[in-house]
Image 1 (cartoon, protein in one colour):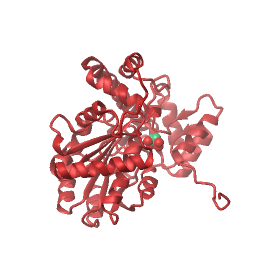
Image 2 (spheres, rainbow, N blue to C red):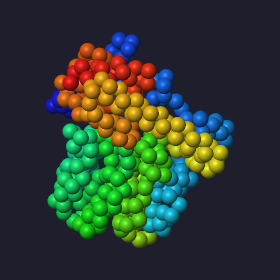
Image 3 (cartoon, protein in one colour):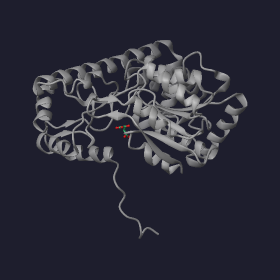
Image 4 (cartoon, rainbow, N blue to C red):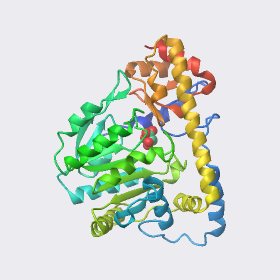
Length: 393
Ligand code: LMR
């Protein structure tokens, strides 16, 4: 059976995680995988989630299946979190999914069912796992230009030109906020123009919202998605709770569909649940149930928002600290974009060789495309880190 199989290429982010773990140097710095870390290098369970888990433990009397769409209170809460109180509820459907990734994959399978010839247009670059996920669903892939590595900004005109090549009915995969891996994002004026193009060319928006609350704030990070949703007839959203609720390993996310009308939404949703049934049958429950408790309790929800904001502000401080340190050490404004970017990542614009030297000579780990996880920056050693980065330029 397996004799013809070759060794699979490891995912570069996961391979880096393993390499970091094995490095014995005590001063090593992990800027690799996108997991939030506090000033002690820990990824804490959030206060509200822990409290909700205690309540869940006391109240839960069964582990029987919840149902294919998962916890309905969680689903309703996610629709409100992502689309706001004004969401067109008659046309919106939501299914709990195993992480944002699970949501991405079942939506991709649904798109393949709905329009087998569709091409999915992805930003160049994008999260490396988007590619196998979309390809795995049998969809065709194309790229639109996105990032100018020299300036650290979005090539917006080139992006629109690229999407001008898409054919009616194609899918455009967009990062709703906090672009991964670059950290460079569209402003609202650009989102408005982009939405106009999507409508004009009859392109289907598929938004990956994995970092809501990590960029400009919980509401501001949803503004682009809400704008698109308010204008287009149909769209899909894969929302992740891994980062903003810090429940990475529990795998909680939401697949949200907006249909043309109620009947269209119902039909698409029934197919989505059918896809999920064929892939993993039922979503995992635990953290979704805890998040539903948080969302339904004003005190817990309020405390979650406070803690999330603390997380966001810490990352902003680290961004500014690194940009300042790099300015001092390089005597240039080359890296000022780090302070302008938003979300968990920035792409520094180093070559793979420079990234390798940072790892080998300084124990600084980042993805080979020079993506750094801002939350991994050591606040008390930013000058040392900046000096190391400048030394390999
Ligand atoms: C990342 O981009 O580092 C995260 O989304 C984790 C992952 O699975 O790649």
